[in-house]
Image 1 (cartoon, rainbow, N blue to C red):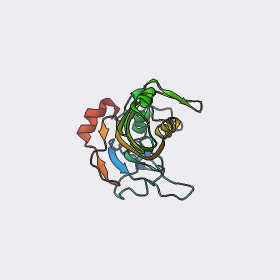
Image 2 (cartoon, rainbow, N blue to C red):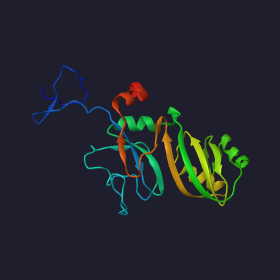
Image 3 (tube, helix red, strand yellow):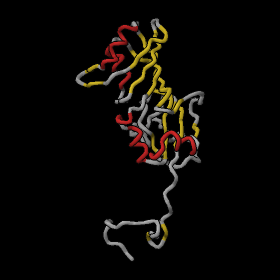
Image 4 (cartoon, rainbow, N blue to C red):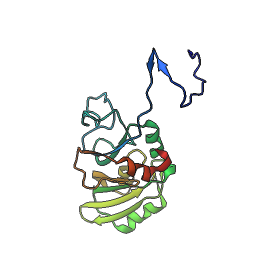
Amino acid sequence: MVLDTPAVRVTAKDTVSVDGRPIGAAEPTRLWRYHKPSGLVTTHRDPAGRPTVFERLPPDLPRVVSVGRLDLTSEGLLLLTNDGALARRLELPSNSWIRCYRARAYGRISQMELDQLKQGIVVEGMRYGPIEAKLEKAGANSWIGLELTEGKNREVRRVLEALGLKVNRLIRVSYGPFQLGTLAPGAVEEIPRKLLKQLLGKQT
């Protein structure tokens, strides 16, 4: 039967072909941890010609998309998947997944000032939700650990700049239950299928 409309229910008993070639079953959902180095753009193609994350991935990796992004000078954990629908679900703020970062920032600040972020903050008209920030090392260059659930564009940099700091290094160390751990910069490691199902359940 030749279909002339997409409004057709397809079941496991049906065989679908295009131009006489059968369409295979969807690939199983897969997820990788990638340690993004600084200096790469999280995009498949960059109009400015800058090097991209996807150009640097191993050639034996299937086509993947990123779960969210890290900006050019940010580094650390970036999740990659072959399932675009899963990527979109994992990005949703409604998941309340905590993103953890370590930021090195020029300028002096106290823990009391950082505690203000627990109530959220408005920067240039943009509202950012509650952020847990801990001063790990004080000095001219302070190290600060941050936990947030929204992950808006350049959120950590903008929030810390509003407190008078200038971020000069930013590392994402975890995304929900997934950790950067000891993964070397530029390295990719697949999350085992069994663990993936345990962590994501029906989402996979």
